Image 1 (tube, one colour):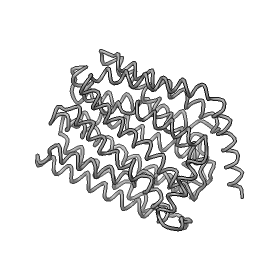
Image 2 (cartoon, one colour; image 1 turned 45 degrees about the horizontal axis):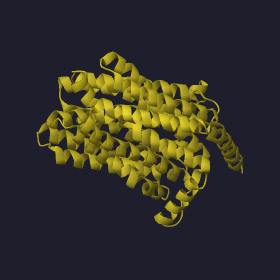
Image 3 (tube, helix red, strand yellow; image 1 turned 180 degrees about the horizontal axis):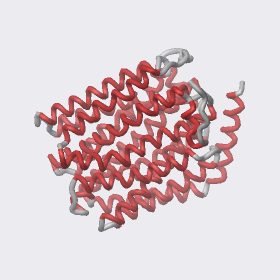
Amino acid sequence: MPSYSWPPALRALQAANFRLYFAGQAVSILGSWIQQVALSWLIYRLTGSVLLLGVTTFAALLPQLLVGPLAGAWVDRHDKRRLLMIVQALLALQALALAGLTALDWVNPPLLIGMALLLGVLNAFDTPLRQALIGSFVRQREDLPNALALNAMLFNSGRFIGPPLAGLLLALAGEAWCFALNGLSFLALLLGLWRIRLPAAVRAQGSTAAVFREGLAYVWGDVSIRLLILTLALLNLTASSYAVLLPVLARDIFAGDARTLGWLWGAAGGGAFLSTLYLATRQTLPVLVRILLVGVLLGALALLGVAASQQVLPALLAMAALGFAISVSNVGINMLLQSLAPEALRGRVVAFFVSIRFGFDAIGGLLAGLLAAWIGAPLTLALEGLLLLGFGLWLLSRQRALHQRISATLAAAAQAAQY
């Protein structure tokens, strides 16, 4: 391939393998967001139960908490590209099966929970595989943070475009067509992965249990990494659980329909998309510590803003701020963790990140559903905002120490990579 001169914010796209992955992932993520919105609307339309929304979200995310770390150890022992192609094919079959069942009107709450659980198991392997492979797709280790930011930008652009598009498709064609489109969207990433060629990678040796223990010892052995993991857990336990309550806000608080739900999702996605554009332009990693602290505090204030909103427009603005805050914090933590991790341990580090990120999202979603069924969605969001605000103020008091520890660890990792 000829050499191109890419802007610094897009420098990872100089690698042909990353361009193939990037193009296929763009289509696949759009389909995934369309399915997520359609599934939440289908559940609430059939049952009117906010508790069932929480249970379904919990079922979809719980496997990433329980299976994710072991999945990371397992994938480090195998050919990641081949495994990812298999998992993508299974995800396509799951979406198409859900489309057929919905079209035939055979869906019911137990079936939807079962399909959400299956999706969660597949995602427990899919997410660490995709994240761990990104480092293999770029030419230089220095391009990895930019590649991660661009990958997150894809996720958030799909989050911005997909929900309003899903709202339109739901109004015109129904949920089954949304699920079918998602099933077909996986073909784009499968084609890109088929065309990618990678050199043979070093695989972890030993049993899955031994490989898992090695990764756990690494993650637990560094104070700065433990604090990043704690921040990840608290952020997603509180702020990320808003997704469970969006159908309730759209229909009961704002007296809207599926299009209102799509706009709320889209506002959060727009804010998240802006956060990844911002992160893609960051040239130094230690500055991410300050960005992370701002993200946590902004997320707390945005939750309080959504809770206080009685009209759609203020809620959309608060949702955009919330999407920015959650994304800039989660992606920033991912960039730091993967930059700190040695190549041989990256699959396991990514798996721990994914496990905490989505596992605590699952727990938070279940708790939010339970609380909202008891005290209502606005008060639930307000309580979560106050909890996150208290943690953010505590974290702010430790900013300097955290910055110094992460800077020292990054310097040591860069020096080790040279040998």
